[in-house]
Amino acid sequence: MIAEETLVNELKQKESQAKAFEVLVNTYKERLYWHIRRIVLDHDDTDDVLQNTFIKVYKNIDGFKGDSKLYSWMYRIATNESLTFLKQKSKKVSISNQELKTAMVENLQSDVYFEGDEIQMKLQQALATLPDKQKLVFNMKYFQDMKYEEISEVLETSVGGLKASYHLAVKKIEAYLKSD
Amino acid sequence: MKKNHKNKFKTPEGYFDSFNERLMDKIAMEESNIPKADGFSLPEGYFTTLNDRVSARLDETEPKVIALKSYKKSYYIAASIAVLAVLALAFYWNNASPFSFEDLASAEIDAYFDTTDMKLSSYEIAEVVSIDELELNDVLENKLDHEHILEYLDENISDIEELDLENEYYE
Image 1 (tube, each protein chain N blue to C red):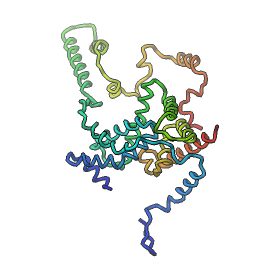
Image 2 (cartoon, rainbow over the protein chains, first blue to last red):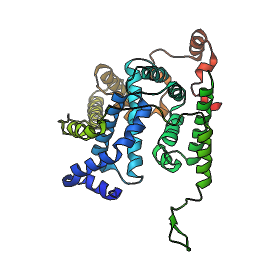
Image 3 (cartoon, rainbow over the protein chains, first blue to last red):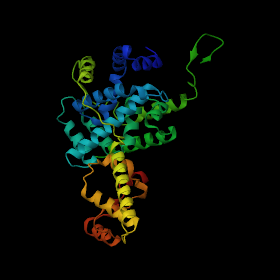
């Protein structure tokens, strides 16, 4: 795999930009797709947000100073794009963010790209009740198997705070799944 | 990287430091009733066509982007105020009017702002107006008293808990 620093330098230079961007998309598209999908739930919406994320990365690469790792910078853009997308969507249909989240989970029942069984549907209902931060931490740790240190760079929160959020999320989800 | 002197095997830095924590997480996961997969799928071949679609969108002709931090309009306002101030000053020197300079200048400036549509977006207003110094009554035409707020809440809110939007955090 190409070194991150080399890739960033190539992205910043006009002559190598196109090729480097292709490498960047190939390297991160799956990981970012699943990260976004677990926030916006719908495949088509995920596709939109994912493309916007890559376009933002491409256009703002000159502003990337290398203070954090490239992947955490991209994850941060993807997270912000996803949350902004949901805010705009709830504004467009004049409902609250929470109402939108409930509606999104209900839509999963007729979604051809959701093959979850009853318990997986219930998991999504449980996740919809969590505050954004807890939901993000849970998905990144449980399903994407990211380390607390990595999540900490993306969400700019202390590792201690993340551990607390994760354990709180797990407890709430387990309690929700146990309830009828 | 930590070396074992009896053989050539190595472990990643900090591997044993975080071992217990990872083991406990794994055990907790095994005992949990949370499903291991979340049931999402996606169209076949989606990732193979993604690159082309992103490239196509990058190639689209971009509309001219006006920077959010546009100070141009602020310059126009500043210039307008300066012109008004100079005119007011000239007026003051040429007439022995009973108006003071301050009265005239602020009256003129108020009238200018009242009659001219600045076409400023909320972002541009937010750039120059400090939220810390802004009171709710500054933006309302009718003064909002505590009595009015209490009356509204009394009529419209049935459960006081509803007001605490972040209630969940305090569990």
